[in-house]
Image 1: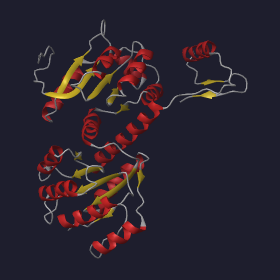
Image 2 (image 1 turned 60 degrees about the vertical axis):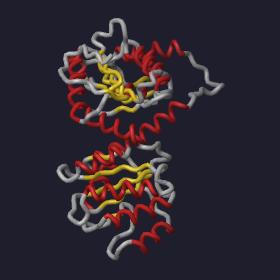
Image 3 (image 1 turned 135 degrees about the vertical axis):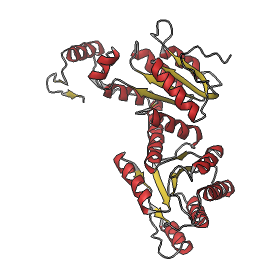
Image 4 (image 1 turned 90 degrees about the vertical axis):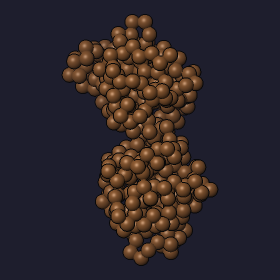
Length: 358
């Protein structure tokens, strides 16, 4: 119906994202943010006090909604954790679900008047349910861009191509901080790159085409790399350059991906750095369905979102099993755990068995 019954004066665009929030203030902020980025929603829901409808009810509904392609959640607490995990596991088999969870610290929980438990328990539940947890609203929309456009990953090995060493180094540092993996190029691919590229270009991963790289240098490297099976995702970085203007380079890259036989199957991310000279290039990438970002670090964050999402989805499909010869008393275990939590203990030692959690 296009009904807006919120406190927000911002009009809501139509789209395929559903947003569920336990905070009206956060809802209004996200609406304002999304309007600036021309992002639309199928549903935009602030739950209030959740007296009659809760997150799990909405997940059940939105999982079957054909107008919704992905679900975004802002959570502060859960009234029924077991129901939430069950609904989330079911919904995440159909479409991506991204979660921001506030109240990590005891101080934040007191401010929100909630007791949402220890944060590692949330991480474990979110991973097991096949969801993706992000840390802030910037990461949220970055992850939406990635999940909306990027093809599913086959693995976690990344290839980086750049027209400068420094942007590639920034990407490498972020990849290292997030425990990401660089791809190793085969001898055949290395040999082809050495023959095709200019003297002075160090053929490696990252591949630095140097500051004066032209569009054709990018395309030459791209075509050789696309012929190989050496990596799972390709990151192309472009710093503003008079030798290779951003829009021209973007058009050349989009055209090359369309023409290459594997262009529809390879996962490609683009980082056109800067703002003034790169805006049009990033718009062209978005229109072409290619994920694009402003900074090398943001691009790596988006890539690692995909890696984590792939890992969580794989975990979702796994069936937990207990050895047949293991005797277990679940009721007694729950009682012991509740007593330990109430006593704020962080270690349980029944006999020789020690169970620890962070």
